Amino acid sequence: MDLETTENFSISWNPRAPYLMGIGFSHGNARYWYLPLDIPIGKWETADLKTRWRHLVYPSNANSTDTDKKASIPTTDWNHDGNLLATASRAGVVKIWTSEGVFFRNLEGHAGHIVGLNFSPNGSKIFTIGVDRKVIVWETSTGKQIQVYYIRKVIDYHWLNDEIFAVTAEVGILILKVGEQKPMREIKTTDVNTIRFDRAETACLAAGYDNSKVIIWQMNKSEPVTVFNGHQREVHTLRWSPKGQLIASIDYDNHIIVWKAFTAEILLNFGHSETLNSIAFSPNGQCIAATAYDGRIFVWNIESKIQIFNASYKVQFYEIGWNCTGEWIAVSAPSAIAIADLRTSIKGQEQISKATK
Image 1 (cartoon, one colour):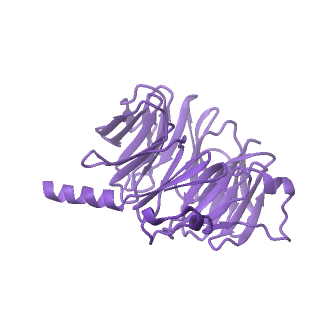
Image 2: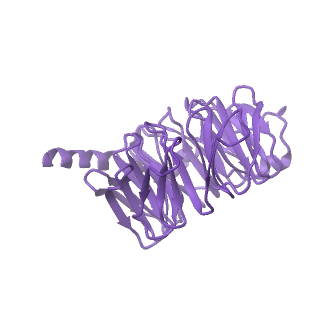
């Protein structure tokens, strides 16, 4: 099911409420969308869906300028408990809302666009990244600045735990600890595009490079743990599986590869004719979903290597995400949001797996 909207930048499923989604739009008015997941998707009606929007409205006494209200919102993020949503605007202000849509607080400290934000794993902190070269760590409960770093050319970022996070930078990868101005570790490189920590088990950091490699680094070792050479071109996106055993990575040769993190064994290798740009593991780690610029959505069962879902739309998709039950996916596009119910596809694959065992 897709619903035409004004241009949107980001979608974020609530991690606790399977029907709730936060959406950032180009006109700066973030919304919640309460999806009718109890109704068969074939019976959804556009008129009804539009009544399920909730605009996140600034209170009259909030410190918010007209410029800020009209600024676009390029990124959104829920905290771990799903009771707070942060929205970052290109006017340099972060706004935090409760899950009921009530304005909670502003975070003001950037001069210019905010290009990224991320709650720490337990939600006690949040960092924001601006074009002013500031990376600011905030205390969520009070809105106080804990620390400010000045870092050039941040492309990607990720928390390991509530004290340690990493960013890509002009000089390489910086691993930072809140409370310490000097990096814990600096991995010098000029060609890293994407990074992610394994929070589940090993605390290793995986990085995708322009030289087509994916390298896994361990915090206390100078040499790589794994160097994966399965790609032919630059690696621009990667994700760890929820249990930290697998990595999915995408390159500019339009290939998605799912592989074992510490043996480099390839489990799935899919090539497409158009640019593949977003991937997401299902919450149980059994499936991987991907989007392409030609409007295609793909979902595979990793163990069987079977493509269990394939849909095509006349839009350019970029961001994909699973809801917390692992039964629905949402995909954002410049002027649309697509929603897919995967319950039948997943159940069918489970029946096939049982029959073959």
